Image 1: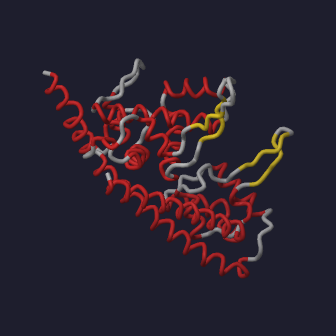
Image 2: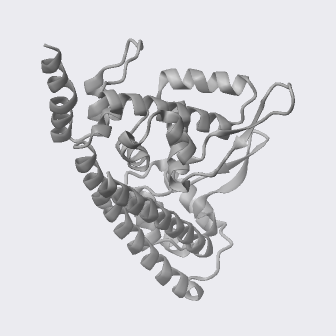
Length: 312
């Protein structure tokens, strides 16, 4: 558990560095080709933000950032050159994308290319750093997965909405649950327990969370709750119920995160798989979405086959 905690925290630091690098790249891109990230245009009487690429960090967008970002480069290529480039490098540029690129380049307010040599140099360096961070994060995530499936906490991967990284980080921050008598102690350690205010014989009122626990544990509790609200059918219903009661999104995420801590505590303690009445739930499908094939096999041997043999 301690090794897993080191790995997940190291990954979180790399992700933070990755985010900072992406923000820096956006700044340099804005200097070189201001409209590359999109601009506001009038469509059917309404103002909308139209982007050239649907995925700013996709292959096509990154290629242009590195090789021919300045508007003058786009205009020099022209429609014919862009089509040829798309085939040559397999960018799969649509006709609409090419037209948008040319239109934005033609009306760009960016400075002349020779005045932006430093920005282009720094952009390339930042793109190199981003590639390095992406590689390191992927290597870390594989290491986290291989270690996580060897622990008792891997049983929570049977829960829809709990991925390898979030599950491993939650388990790592929970620590050895044998040190705790009930899940409420873990919630208090995370600092996500609500503060209760009561005076006299009045009904108690619940305000903000205490935030008196471990910040890293609190962060993953929030992220887990957010993931469950979008990817777990049962938790999605509970999220909707919380919102109907007047809870803000952040409050609802914390509530679901706390619920997951209680569920995880029970599942890990008793080594039981997730139980649900959802008709389309299939354990194998859930695991294949999250784990490499060898680790799916290891999961089954540890939590399914061994449990069945014990019952028999």
